[in-house]
Amino acid sequence: RSVRKRAVFVYTKKDALSQQQTMNIISALRASIRNPEQVLVHYQPMYDVQTGRIVSAEALMRINDEHLGFLNPSQFIFLAEQTGLIVHLTQILLAKVCTLIRQNLAKNALEYISVNLSGEDFTSRQMGQTLLSIIQQENIPSRKIGFEITESVVLQSYDMVADVMLELSLKDIKFALDDFGTGYSNLQALMDLPYAYVKFDKSVIQGAMSNPTMLTLLSDMLHKLGKVLIAEGVETEQQLEMIKKIGIERVQGYYYSKPLEKEAFLELVG
Ligand code: C2E
Ligand code: CA
Ligand code: CA
Ligand code: CA
Image (cartoon, rainbow, N blue to C red; front, side):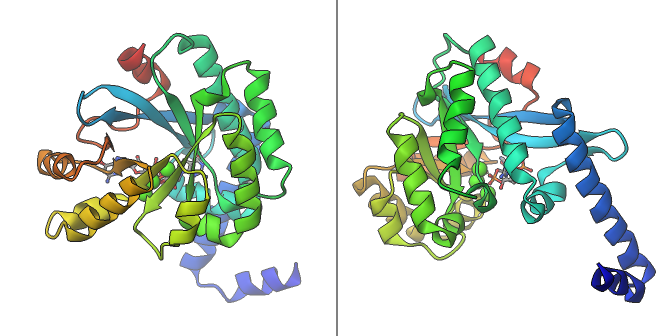
């Protein structure tokens, strides 16, 4: 405690303000865990490249705080992870997604809705059971839920992630390797873990516009491993043409749709 006080003391006015902002955001996160209606879920559809149909969607978190207003993930996910509050927020978001599926999408053709998991969500092997019990409480088929995990999370705590993935895969829950191509890739993890989907990060898609060799090679390899590929952050027709040519199956991006509020999303898929 005294260390933190001293740190504030030597900060400049501007830094002190950002320290204050940090504390305000952490308060907002705590408040939203007490009042889950402040946790908002936006849904971004994913499309089948061949048919142009919506096949799934990604749930993306926002916070609506009474003092700070609307917060985007770039403002709070990092702090939610640092404080461990992400565990509660993930559970709130998952419950909301399950409720939406039960109330509005029970008979819908959507394959699944995916939820992002952070490394900090993996606090113990118990977390698989915790996530399952949330899904079961809402009484929806577990195959309607997917989880997105980045490679760095996998490498951070390989054994625990592998256990939880295996446990949930047995219940037909789908996993996607998120943000692929942004860091060092571990081929072994890709082969050993039960990912059904691999999502190329938007930086990879953008980079491939000037030189598609890397994306083409990676796609061929991932297809040989039996993965279904998703291109993230597709914004232009040229990008769409390129991923079609390479044979990437699915796309998510502003070209088709931004993340939508629940009502707009339901209007689109309902
Ligand atoms: P992500 O998982 O890579 O999610 C995709 C992000 O790219 C989303 O930003 C989405 O709005 C944005 N995006 C989608 N299409 C396009 C496009 O065509 N162009 C551009 N420029 N951007 C596009 P968002 O919603 O701000 O989320 C940012 C990040 O925050 C996510 O990146 C994810 O890492 C994290 N995040 C969001 N919601 C959650 C959550 O519920 N739990 C956890 N742990 N992390 C989350
Ligand atoms: Ca994601
Ligand atoms: Ca992603
Ligand atoms: Ca990304």
